[in-house]
Amino acid sequence: MNLETKWLEDFLALAELRNFSRAAQFRNVTQPAFSRRIRSLEQSLGVELIDRATTPLTLTPEGRLFRTTARNLLRQMEDGLHQLKGQSGFGPQPLDFAAAHSLSVTLLPELIQAMSHEGQMLRSRVESIDVDLAVEALQEGRCDFLLAFNIEALMQPPFLSLSLGKTELRPVCAPDAGGQPRFQLTQSAPIPILGYSPDAFMGRQVNGILRALEDSPTFQPVMESSLTNLLKVMALNGSGIAWLPGYAIVDELRSGQLVDVVSPEKRDIYWGEVEIKLYRNDIRLHAGAEQFWSALRKKCQQGWVLTPDERLM
Image (tube, rainbow, N blue to C red):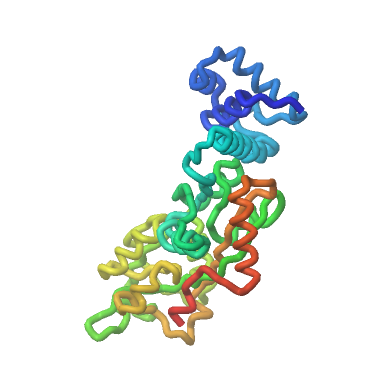
């Protein structure tokens, strides 16, 4: 198989820009020459990488997988050249993570810290985005790993996953002067609720909990957002109740800034459970990413969990 480096760079530019003209301009070649180079790459691999029938262009399933391969091949070549020249460059290749917003500021730093050795922090790049967009990033090979929740679309080939623990979705609010919940699900007046956007992952989970309630309270929507931290801030200032994941409110529950709206006896009715998982494509990643995955898998097999919910029980 004859693969030219410039073909790989062309393909990655096209995968990012989704337009032949813009990608050719970015690569400083004419569009006909650029198109021929993409076609040469496809012919060399024996598969089509680009779905040319869509606007904007999309990658085929094979193209999404090859995007990761192309990125890793170029990185390995760059590292090898640095070694030949006696240069260290920036050290080992960074691990590319995509993560749901709330996970990127809570659990992902803990994961990186737990997997760092002898005081040397793992090199990493992190993209914090909506869960559905993060899934797309993994599917299209724009990241090595995705830290997210139990997502059905990623529970099958060509993806692999490790379970890092579970978190509880629990209704919480600010306390009153006596330390009791400021709002009660049994109150006759409408209950102000701070809700997730219905199309967000957490929004779908919370809506499932509410639909399962036999006697659903009357809620008055106050705010809707896909951001867990924003809903937490609004709950802290007493604006309403919110179903928030345990990992995001450890300190607030411990300090009493937030309290559970329902008693532990009713948790089976009003609480939900979400699994935290790390996903990857089932193709070989660069050496550092493979070492990270192997070490984390061994750690999980020994019973290690990332989620801090047990501290709240």
